[in-house]
Length: 77
Image (cartoon, rainbow, N blue to C red; front, top):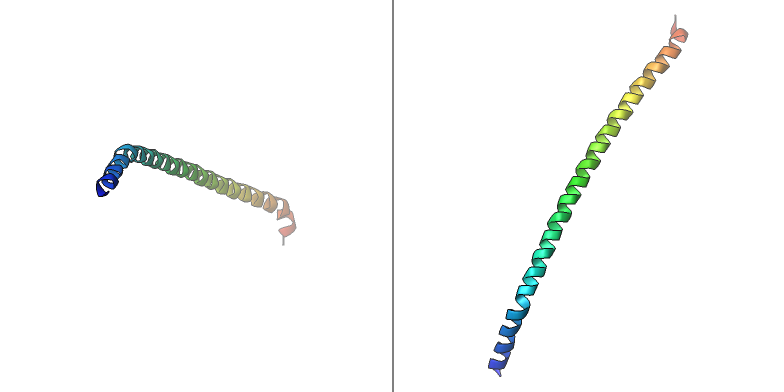
């Protein structure tokens, strides 16, 4: 009885284990690719946010100059 169980176990290990290892390898590769893509997207998003902050700061400074220029005649003492 134990020989039959041992034989079945060995057969399963011989037939199934390589497939499971191959599946695990594919899953690991997909996980790594997904992490790489995520990092690339986050880097692009951070660069975009920095660009938008810079653009908003530039627009704010431009608007302040325009407002100061238009209100300067009212600020004469």
